[in-house]
Length: 168
Image (cartoon, one colour):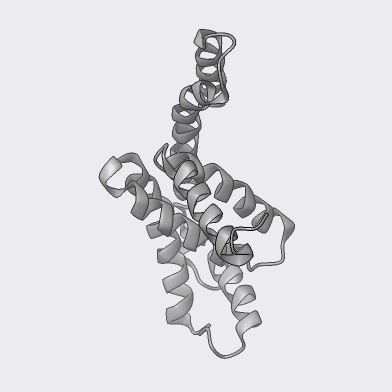
């Protein structure tokens, strides 16, 4: 999978015209990275399809949920039913997010669900978890419409003008 994605990325970059802005490169790279993200989510779910993952006594989803819940005291339940919820919820997220991201009509919903999921995971103190969540949050921006950057920039400009009353 990685080799195919690298080859596709190289082919798209080689085809890109010279002496143009970064938008051309972004529009050529974005489909390859989107494909990689969708494959990554499906693979994350597929590799958890085993009996140990379904056992709340030893499941890494249950352990992760329990360790995150420790930050919230008694607010987040850690009973057996909640651990089963974390296990099946992780399946739902890791198989559901890519399905939502694939289709244009559900892409923004998939983006929002993925943001929520990774913000929840990033609460855990393990460096590998919150650093991956930080990375994936940046990559998920490639699933937004191309106009999102200019719209966000306009919003920021309005807020800065409001804060500074138009004075730079």
